[in-house]
Length: 497
Ligand code: ATP
Image (cartoon, rainbow, N blue to C red; front, side):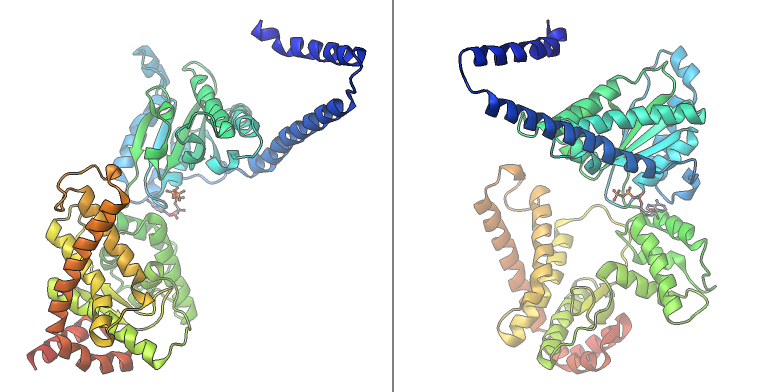
């Protein structure tokens, strides 16, 4: 019965119209509405098909730009896990003999710019497959059914291209899968649901003995947002974390991107790798590129340490700006930055690498800290000190002006994020709590109590160094940038005095 539903509807409509005319009703407006509705749906569908075409033509194909795992820095564990999974595809007979179910999907999750796209490209190369890439946002349309149509077209295209190229497999890479694969909310977003359903259907249609074999690789920065239907076994069978690189990984990535650039002999990439803690692969690539641009700007033939240091500052804080500030503003910024630097030296001696007054990105001044060893666990005292360093800019302004300025906004944001970490790690007086159950009032209360107490401690410590502020201010205003050593000399001299 369901099978013949369209035919039944088509047959029923003329009968209904004839009946309405027979009983004397004016059917013209209804007919016009029907024709209009049909035209809108038809236009939307054909638009979906038409717009899909240029994108498909533009999709990158691994055949054109071979990319191997050797060209990916760090990520050793992710690469190893991925290769193990891909061997399912490479050694198909052995896998079939053991009766292992074919691998249908691999999910790469991790922060932006960590090399997920590169891993997918290398996977296509490793398995000698056709590579097709799309982004979740390409499937988002206002009209119901268009996204689902695009998913269908993508799988069809992969099969056709693989057949044409004589390949036995195809890798489809979908970036930002969370856009279409987010948790379904039961009816409001029908378009998204249909697109996701289509993707699930296509994945279910992947069989061990089909040729070409399709492997879906998807990437996301927000795995927790994904619908559980996507994550169950038989769909994305392998889930691989692609984390920010550690120091060894960062050095490897820097070396890869230094390969095609003239680097001066005295450059110590190991130091650059230490200084760039928390950088993603994309940021490290940008550091090398910006350093080369600085070399060009200063008409140097080689990239030197100076260029690389400037490039790190630029990637971390943004480009230097020409913002002219008034004398009063500069003085306030200088005291604010001295506050950060003095507090950093008090709680972590030797940690300041530079105090600068030059405006960069959104900041009017900044303090750069020496790299610490890669650290993934933090204790409560460490996080408290971190908050005190962040609050010390505002504390210094209060000490000298009796008020604060908008310059502390970023510092407060950082402090509040640290409080969040403290709460979620059970490191506050609240004990072990489920933070999702906490009310806004409870959050406001815990933020206030922690930050107020640390602000008092910060001010007490800084007050003891009032002389250092007044005596270093002029030097900083004059020189604009103080190296860590220079600042520590001032701190020592004025403390002793
Ligand atoms: P997003 O989640 O934002 O899509 P992604 O994780 O897919 O990011 P990629 O597109 O793979 O990141 O990386 C962006 C660029 O950063 C690459 O083109 C490359 O130049 C550089 N890069 C990132 N990670 C690495 C790495 N591990 N080794 C070498 N280069 C890297």
